[in-house]
Image 1 (spheres, rainbow, N blue to C red):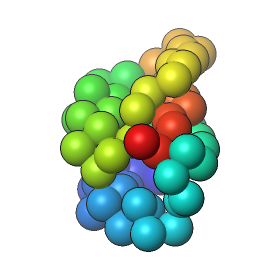
Image 2: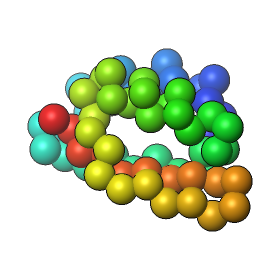
Image 3: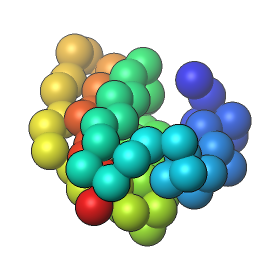
Length: 64
């Protein structure tokens, strides 16, 4: 999902993901990942694992 579409959705995902639940994001460009991860953190998601494949990133977050 393009960063511009994903960022506005992240805060609303706290209503969808139960406390302690998991959120997996993938297909994020390396150049956009820091902003996506920071937005996820500010929405209450804690990064658990980040994986890289070339310029692509995926991350597993847990809702705090």
